[in-house]
Length: 267
Image (cartoon, rainbow, N blue to C red; front, side, top):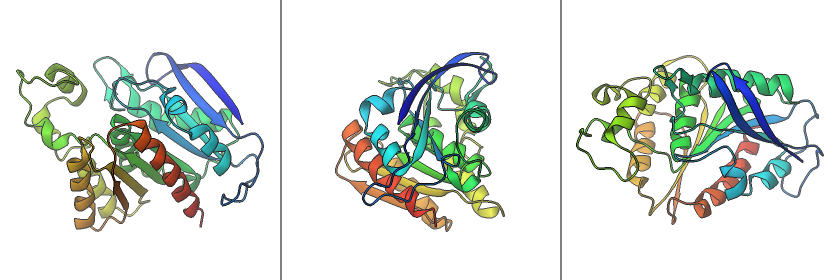
């Protein structure tokens, strides 16, 4: 296994950005793991961090390096700032384009990964869980599966925010900068519910979804609601909930379960 610390100029962002990558170099079969694929056909997983995080969070907080080797999956972790992985047209930092266009192209041109849709996944926790759902459902031709852990499901609360709001995470001005007019987010292409409905109504790929949240997590109500909504529109998915809060103990437990799940998608 090799760990890469990458600095690259991003066309999408207009500046240097950082990516941490984990690439299996010795393809072996671990007990209970999948059969190794040819060296030039590794599956790839883009893994997104949460609010206030950086590209190294996953490798420091979880066992993702070991899991990448066990499951023969190359993992790529970009630095997403506090962008919610959306395009920021005001600042010219197009994080959606980075994750869904530029990064997959860079990965395939640089590392021995498969270019097949069925071998290309995305995941994340908290802000990154939202980003993973948004990316997979808005770009179902890019990602075949999505892992969303303790996702920040904010759409319903955004329209209730006011300029005098006191939020321990961020100010009202931050949310309006990221999402624009907060009264117009619901039903837009920033709304994971609207995106899921468009996928169901379409004729293209329907990304497989693995969603999990701790039962004591501050965002559990939003995750339960989203799972119920997916049920209501007939979008088959996995939803897991067990004791846990918004921390690495929960995310590490479920990234292990979710990478096991990815192996079941190989057919």
